[in-house]
Image 1 (tube, rainbow, N blue to C red):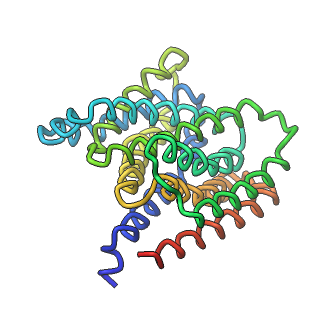
Image 2 (cartoon, helix red, strand yellow; image 1 turned 135 degrees about the vertical axis):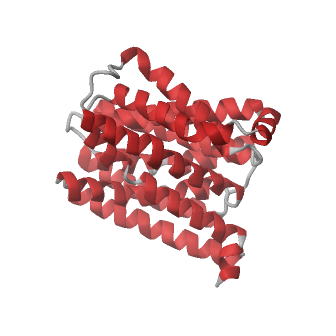
Image 3 (tube, rainbow, N blue to C red; image 1 turned 180 degrees about the vertical axis):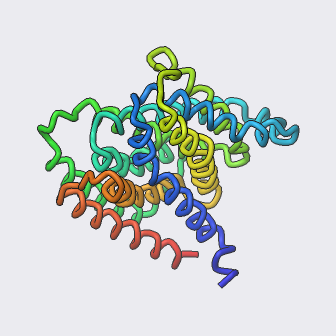
Length: 285
């Protein structure tokens, strides 16, 4: 059993699954903060930077990051902008809509990996992506006409940036992850600050933002971004599909925001495709 988990593909799958489980609480924590997305982003970014800065400032880590300085800035920028888009989307549309749209990230990851890394994506992964797109289409068809277009468009933009982020991490496998999170957090706070009111929140809001920014997000991003060391970017993005089911579930259980029936159906289809792709990949090792 131990040798199973030591295989590269299984190790990557385990790390990414743990990270996605943590990040699936993102929508719930944003809602519990009960404030605008700009202020959420400022404090989340600052807390993320505070949590990871002691690790990022180690001499050996800084030397390794300096070797891939262009990758550090690109990955940090993509992480910051995708995070900002997702936070704003969570405040403007339903959690189910956001995470279902986010499930299209494998399309962009596979496309960018093919264009820039010349990385061939297995047929089984393309088939899984196609099935997932069918699930997304099913959900989106049910969501049209509900006045949530701005939030949906922000989620779509964040999805594209997420695919680019995973491809960048794949392109720079030796880039330390903690500097990316620290710099990405600072950029996130900087981008959101002009439109935020960061000192006008309740004590409860600050508490939830601390849990999100200092604990949940840094650890989740760290685990997920280790994944591309062992798995292709498109396959890592496929694991994010777990959030498609889990995030609306947590919001429903705590805040009683029940997902539509079409979202549940689409989520089941997406999870089934993810499971088959993962099992097929394990047999190839």
